[in-house]
Structures are given as structure tokens and as C-alpha cells.
Length: 189
Image (cartoon, rainbow, N blue to C red; front, side):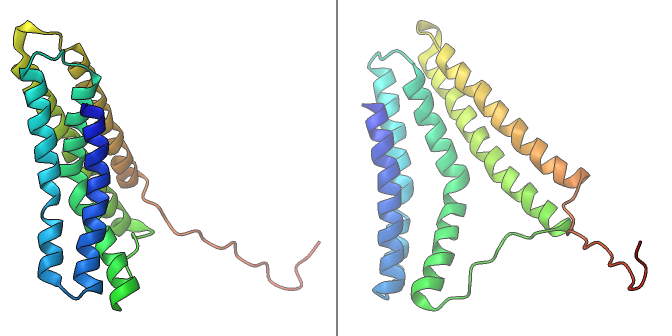
């Protein structure tokens, strides 16, 4: 049941996103569109409540409960940037808005951009890890929480990978490709 609810939440996210943007830009009802977009956190709240009820009713904490916590964490950490990404493209395509901004290609701007992306992913993983810890405390000594701990380890790995990627751009910033210098005419072999 939990996995089905996670799928319903994911589908619901995209349906609400499409409906909110359509109302905002196509139907010219910006307030209604924003109201629909603000319904999206309710999906995660429902998933959280159902997962807690499932555990309260004696379900063994397993990978499904961990996946629910991870889904909620990633929705919290990455949901806003996903909505902003879609909003920029929808506004450009259907409402004559400016073209979406591309990520910086080189130098300090690219490094800053990579750190911001890493921060969002780390926040998502941290929220997921905190929810997993809360679930472990909720289950208490009465149940096996090894699956939840396994998910926490994966979240630490996500944090580590994102920090390593961002740090690599700090240490070795991406530079534009330099065209090879053309040999002067007349100097051949």
C-alpha cells in the first residue's frame, strides 16, 4: 500500500504542477494556479500520515517505509526547484516569458551553481535522514529498524557524492576550451 501511495503522490505532483501552471498561464488565473501549486505539500503530508499509521498499526518497518521517508525528503529538498524549473519553461513557451536561464558554463559562476545544487540535494537527503530517524524512534525497541538505518546510510552517501562534486568544481573550476593557436603562414615543414 505504501509503494502505491508513493506512486500516487508522484503522479499527483506532476498533475498538480501541470494544472497549476495551466491555470496560471493558459487560463490567466494566476491566483488559482498558485493555490493549486500550494496543494502539492498536502501529498507529502498524506504520505507521512499514512506511513505513521501503518507503523502504528504494527507493520514491520521495511524498505517501503524508508522509501516513503526518502520520497518526502526529496520532495521537500527538490520540489521547489523543480516547480521553478517547470514554471520558467511553461511561462516561456505559453506566456511569452523570457527564455529559461541556463546553468553557467564556466568559472566561479559555475562553481557557485554547483554548490547551490549540492545544497538542495544535501537538504533533501538530510530531511529524509531525519524522517528515517523519527521513524526509527517511533518504532522503538519493539521492531527491527535495520531497513531504515540502511536508507540513512544511503542518504549519507547522497550527501557525500554531492559535496564531492561541488568541491571538485571548487578545486578544478570548469574553464572554457581554448582554441589551439594557429600556426603563422609560411612556417611549414
